[in-house]
Image (cartoon, rainbow, N blue to C red):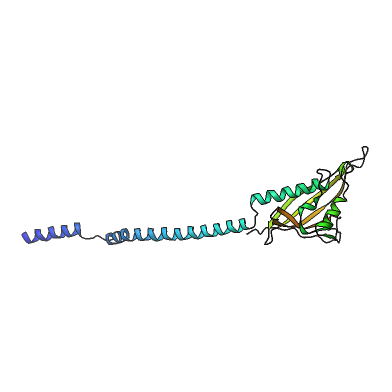
Length: 214
């Protein structure tokens, strides 16, 4: 009887404290779960770091295709001054906006250098004889280049030739420009003007600059 009782107690104790089916798996899982969590967090950190690197590279590429804000504003001011100096807005000629070796290309006729540019712009009728003429530069695009910047703008000119006359759109087209930054500020290195024509015209169109999208 005594032996039988010991066997029962032993069996009960063994059954109570011995690992039951699945208990070893649970214990092993508890040991493995922190390691799996650590691996998952490590992988997530690597992925986030890679995504951050790609984002930073994209930001740098985007910024590399843009001019600093102060340069953009200065060049925009140059375009605005040009229209006013060619019209009757100021008392100076527009040759000051060019470099000493600057080029003004009008429909294929090239005017090169400071003296030639001064002569050309001084022959634009000044003062009251230019009242009733205004031209507008719009849709300005600026892209940085190794030498400075490429610029492009649409231009539209309005004229009213007499008090009784209607206001007319007399010319429209596009400026394509090369600009450099000098000790005096941004200047035109080359300014190309081409009038627009009509549908199906064979006249060549100078491509405008553009910033890469990626």
